[in-house]
Amino acid sequence: MKKKKNTGNCNPFKLLRVIIIKRNIFQLTFFALLIFSPYLFAQKALPQQRAVQSEDLVEILKSDELEIINENGVDSRRVTNGVFRHQGALLYSNLAIQNINTNVIEAFGNVKIVQGDTVTVTGDTLFYFGNTRLAIVSGRKTVLKDSKRTLTTRKIEYDMANGIANYKFPGRTVDEENVLTSKEGFYNTRTKEFTYYKNVKLVNKKYTLTTDTLLYNSITKWSDFNGKTKIVNKDGVVLGTKGRYNTESAESAFHKRTTVDNETYTLTADSLVVDGKSNNGQGKGNVVIVAKKDKTVLNGDEGFYWKSKGYSKIFGHAYVRNVVSEDTLYIRADTLYSYENARDSTRKLIGYKNVFIYKTDFQGKCDSISYNTADSVIRFFQKPILWSDQHYQMEADSITAFLVSNEINRMLLKGKSFVITEDTLVKQFNQVKGRTINAFFQTGNKLKQVLVDGNGESAYYAVDDNQKSIGLNRVECGRMNLLFEDNRVQRISFVGKPDGKLIPPSKIKPAERQLDGFNWRINEKPTKAKTIWAEL
Image 1 (cartoon, rainbow, N blue to C red):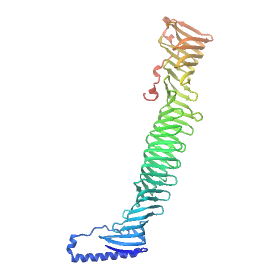
Image 2: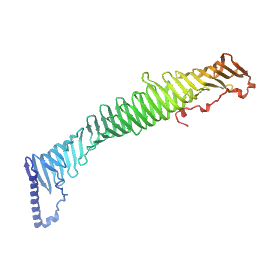
Image 3: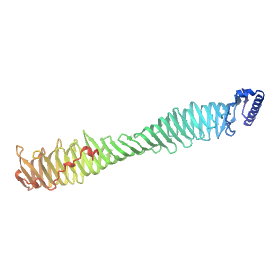
């Protein structure tokens, strides 16, 4: 082994001459051995080394001490407090061993790489492969810095040719707005794109994002994530599995089943777009909006929510569930609207086109409907019809239902009003019609009283004390008051001059059993399954 020391600053031109002299001496020795010892060459061949082009060799700019070493045909340099230059980058260390044959540098102590005027990597040790420009920097604290961010970990592999750094130890990236941690990651110093894996956490002043995999572009501020993801801000929580989030505008787009949850509502959908600043959301695919304060749930194929207005719109197989006491009111429509009253947390629901309504004690259908939870009033418009499990049917141009303690207390029918009750004793129908009808109910949703105002007509079956039919009463009167018990008329009073007759059972003609407009439509009564689109 041959060594030569040189202290002070290194002159690269002198160093080159030294290397040439050493190689000439080695060649003379080699040829002498070849002439005088022919058998020696046959027994031991020289190692084959790939020649390094001089322009690709890492260059020493300066050092405090330089030692040139040749061992087994391998040329190397031992450089103390040296500075190297390669392809526009500078490498610093306390001690470095440079292999001339392989163009590889091992460096130790205060290692630093400076690439251009933007990227700096520091650590305790360095392996630099000059032919591929791969730098492996490690240490208790290995740091990569560019103009706007700092990556800290234990070991960084930096592909200087392509500007890509990666780490497989827990790392922490910090910029002006964000702190991002993960177990593994890649950083493209040119495109400013980060790819993070395993236990990824992004934190800034506005929110915290955790996920399994995250691609973050620090220029566009978009974060694309894949895997179980959670975004938490002051307004609520977003839970998803795949999508993207903008750290600056707080916009988000989710491509798989996602939920937005805050103090007032929960919005879930197969795909979801949320404006983080306004907290407005748009969902598509099996959309579910839950208003927490009044236990209202909206379902549909597509929906919108405007948080500042407390307003929701949902359509496509749309229906709403409103839980009151222990019963649930279901409303189905082509389009549903929900308006929240922030002052008292009440809600107004509006259904438009092809409305079905279902509740355990009554069902109905109409063209449009409104329901105000503040006063428990339901209004039905355009040819509404209602049924009850207590065997009655009501029709009018419009119907208003007044609920008390979750039960119907009164119904107001306006315009072409028609009430039919099924008398199960005589197996016939009692009927009342008029311009306006007020129907009152007792506990159990049983019809108690009917007040008719204008153009009143009635057809009801009278029975004796033995519950035996005594005939059919047909009465016409402008105003009338009918009292019911078990869906049968017990008493009737008239205001004005009534025109009526009692027809004995044997003389009742089929046409006399029904008032004009009679149509018992019990087969159209919606079921719960039909109201929630579970059946056609």
